[in-house]
Length: 222
Ligand code: SAH
Image 1 (spheres, rainbow, N blue to C red):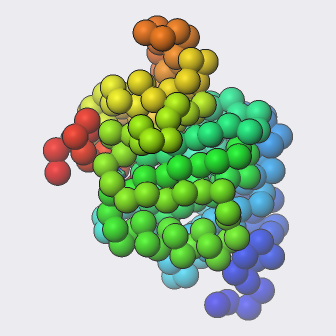
Image 2: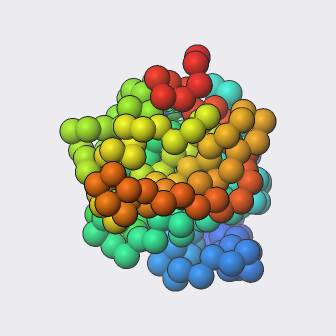
């Protein structure tokens, strides 16, 4: 550990405040979302060798060929869910646990699914150390969703798939939203789906992005 940079909320306080200023400048206005980014110590969820880069707006390697998404896109996706508190949210692609930790500050319940056991285990340890109590971590193929926990107020997919997995749409509440990156492997569009009726959905495109592959039954083949 470097001098002056502790684990937990007391480390990198000013650096994190600067990150929040940058998120504001990028157009993130939701005060609760901004407070969550000020609160969650992203450095604790990346390898210590990368602490110096933990609050830059970039993705960083977390092992197993995967990355923790850049804070800017995590903020955009979180804001796009339009959370007011009390929601039940499904995340597909736990990775480092950062997006789950952000969501945990904003809603009552988060279920997050990861397909790689080593990452799921690391995220479990990391989230426990942060004292996050309302996130349930599951190991499996998130492209099938989690019917046992459905319906969800919101679903966030944090890996890039060819198209929106059908089972996830079916597990949304009417009025609920799904946000995620969909399209070719070399560049996706951030999509927001809203369920407006039992069999009715609207689709919006929020910009281009690049994520690691969503691998599974309703994603890319292994
Ligand atoms: N939300 C994460 C982003 C991690 S990158 C964070 O905040 O750090 C995306 C993650 O999705 C990777 O860990 C990858 O293993 C996982 N993933 C890919 N396909 C998946 C699937 N079908 N089900 C669950 N997780 C999946």
